[in-house]
Image 1 (cartoon, helix red, strand yellow):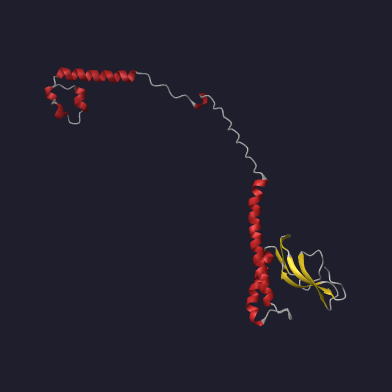
Image 2: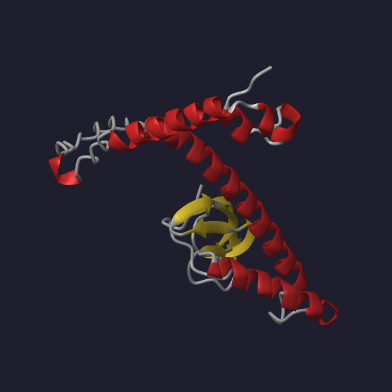
Length: 203
């Protein structure tokens, strides 16, 4: 089997294909001439045109992005109920806690001296710390005890009780305190009001 000179040159191991002496000399020369001719024709081809410069390229026209669709406003009536429920739940818990702390203070304080009982002094410090925390939150707790009674007070009078040595209506006792948070009434107080004996008891 005869192999061309090009096949022999490109072969990894030409000896496995054919031995060079076995190839006729005239055929080898002819294949070599043909290879040289092909190379000359490749060189004679005109070079490919260079790429067009950027300046000659048509300008890119920017396309305006579409405007986003307006976000529909959520009606306040759809948001208010959830916010109101959360506020009411927090207000109820805060009011119950404040009332319990107030009751603890009433039991700790000696009504005759106005000072904490001896065995309650350590607990009294914790209770007063709770009242300070309530004050920082904007929470006001008032039982109005020993203060003059006025019809404008945020309290519910459970009874009017004639009491000696009173010059005017005075809050004698509180069943529960008035609780106000940031000018918002959370709980109406319940009190007992003492009246001077020389004045008819109010209905």
